Length: 110
Length: 115
Image (cartoon, rainbow over all chains, first blue to last red; front, side, top):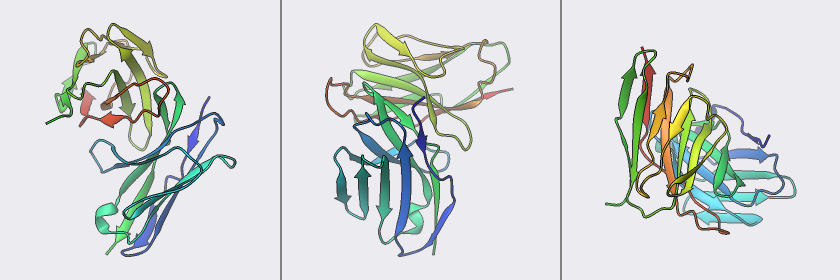
C-alpha cells in the first residue's frame, strides 16, 4: 500500500512568517510530486509540482524534494491570511495516478 | 474558457437510489479521474480513464460505475450498492501523455448527501 503522510495540523503562523509544510511518502519509485491548496468547501488547486531533488521556487512558494529521505516540503514565505487553507501533498503512484495525503491545515493569523 | 465542469453542485439522494454525477472538460485532456473526499480525509481514487472507451478501477470502486464514451465526458454513477455515499466528489483531468509527469486539474466538485 503506497502511503503519503502529512501532519494534519493545524499549523498556526502569524502573518508575515514562513510556513513550513512537510510530507513523507513510502514508494521509492515515485517520480512526480505535487502540492495542492484546498479552501474549505472548494476543490483542490495546484500550487506547485516538483520532479527533481532540490528546491523549486515560484513567487512566495518553494517546494523542496529529497528522494533519498523520501520527503517533500512546501515553504510559504511572507504568509498571508489568504493562505489559510488545507494543503494536500500528492505523489504519483503509477502511470498518471496520484496518491494524496490527508492534508495539513494552515492558519495564518493577522 | 477552458476548464472542467461538474454538475450538479449539490445532490441529495434517497437510500436505494442510483444517481449520476456529470463531469465535462474542454481541455482536450486524454485522462480523467473521479475521487471521493470525506471530512478530514485526503482524496481517494474511485475510477480513472486514460482513453475513450477504457477505464480502470481505483482504490474504492465498489458501489460505483463509470463510462467514457466521449473524450470530454466521464460520468460517475453512485449505485445503491455504495453503503456510505455521502461525500464530496471531485473530477479531475490530465494530459495523460505517456512517459511524462502528468499534472491533474480539478473541477469544482459535487457534494452528495444521502437522506
